[in-house]
Length: 316
Image (cartoon, rainbow, N blue to C red; front, side):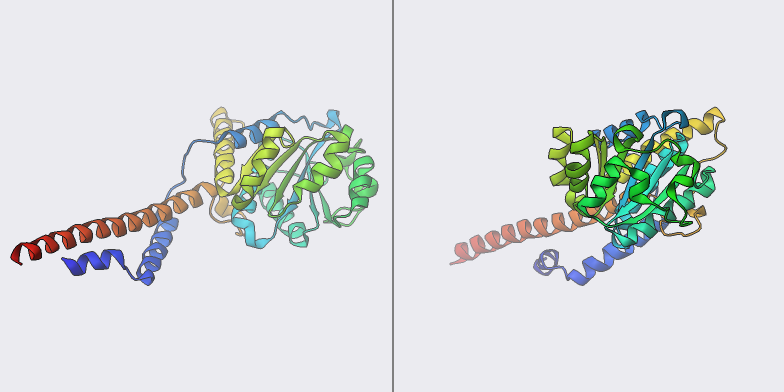
């Protein structure tokens, strides 16, 4: 009995890693998409995008900042996929821009192109790539007052940005950007708040990694951001809202079938965020079980030691 209790308290960490590793693989292969409670900050984000008017008559677009690299694709990439699906389901016109993150200039448009093939979005008419831009004060100031002059050429075809139909009537941030969404693994949202929002009252949606969420809530409370998509949980919540919207369209007959993540050509995001959240929950549950086992082992061994001590005293 004593050996077993000692094993419960001092389980080899290699066994713990092995159990969690096997569990993650099994859950990824056989698990399901998690349906959870959508947090209010993500709901606000979704509602802000839903309310944005980007029709050709409005001469407005949504701009999506793709300030992330390959190392945060699990969070930022899934956030972007859920957002872009929402934009395409609601026929929002949008642009993507990578300010200060060269990998974002590649990762962001790649996700959009994968989705555009399934949702029938046309480059230059429904969406546009603003490419990579240097994060300088001069850029932000010029962009605020004259978008075509700040961007100059698109990031895909290298043609003058003003030559694309989507840019017809697009001139300033105040008049022509319905909303800016910053998907980032850095503090880039503060540049947009300081240099652009303060001059234009730009509405900003913020999608950040999980470790950055704590510093984002004050921005939400102050109204500087209109919604928050925090980490993988935020991506899963937004994906759930988008899935519900798409399912309603399928049932109404306005869309033929639900989005299939495995049909994307690049396969850089083969698992949806809701599946990854289910996997994460399974791993957390396994860790909790190990913690409980260790504490139960400690409690029982303490009781056993006291019992043995009393028996020894009685014999003496």
